[in-house]
Image 1 (tube, rainbow, N blue to C red):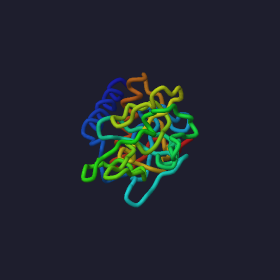
Image 2: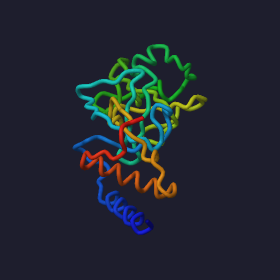
Image 3: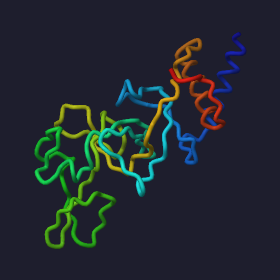
Length: 211
């Protein structure tokens, strides 16, 4: 009993250590690291998603997306606003009634020839200057993503993000790494993560059908 449990834990640990978490060739899976949109997607859920090609696809208000900036964990969240140009419009207001001077609707003036760093053109220009928005969307949750920061002075749990940290679309929960208890929470987590990497690399799903 004890030796078999220890062997299973060691095997799961080896699988976890050898796995390349940010594998770019799919299947696109991650273990949810937060609760930004729980109960739809919660911490420790295994989420499967489609790669977001921002050159050919768009996301809209109400869509669930997967965020990652190559530094932090993957997060599943929900788009709360239309693209910034439409959401802020000409009067700098959104349905969230953001305060004057909020970071989301602020625009930055750039002179002709300056780089826009991928920011969104506001459609406003003045002489040789054009104005750009730094962020594209408001999303659910106070997220720790490097390029995402909370909207200042706003009580709701929302964050700002741009399209460049959206990695996935159409997320689906396929399992929970903690749904089968094994001896202790620590062992359960280790075994669950081992089974996750087994699924990710071989397609073998030992979690069973989603509940």
